[in-house]
Image (tube, rainbow, N blue to C red; front, side, top):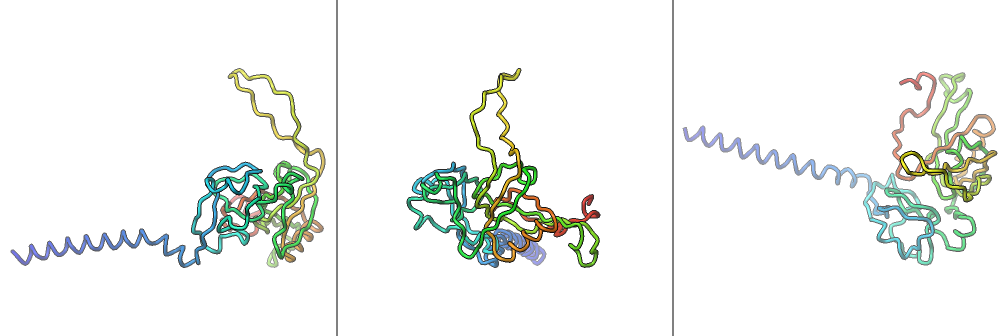
Length: 256
């Protein structure tokens, strides 16, 4: 009788210990996963920040997060050291990493929002219609995705296949030429609900010329796509998720 009682108590104790070990392991799983990816502490936007905000006023809008090194932008800031006197060149949205290109000298920002090109990159321009440029609503400082479509030759195994791929991710946009200037417009009459609908942003009347900062290999891809294929852009902030699927879009992939 005693032996059965002791065996039962031992089983309960072992079960409790096992449960505690499982909980402990689960709680540490995320931390171990990040640790294995060489984590880096970077500044991340926690609250919306309007363009023109002085660096000295930024801290309440930021938080420091430990992120896997592979997902941290090369120009991401770990602190605001050395950034005194600058202002935000564009609006900052929650969740994005604070990168050096988002900060600029006040006079530079006021003169048109010129964006400093990160060291080691080069600028290249191409021309697209508004519908291929997020309706013409992109602004310098945005990060974009560049889709390249080819009529043929995109797949070695299927040289005649038409293909599309999001080839370049989170590319820094340094200039936009041809976008309409936002001007004051008469307020529309109120709707039946009493609220006046917000006016739609203006659409460019003609094509836009966009300038991006990329390395030499990506510059060649953009030129090739412009010359022998077609380009399409997306607004791809630094915190946008890349599922990686499918790598290359073909007709059979469209309905999957």
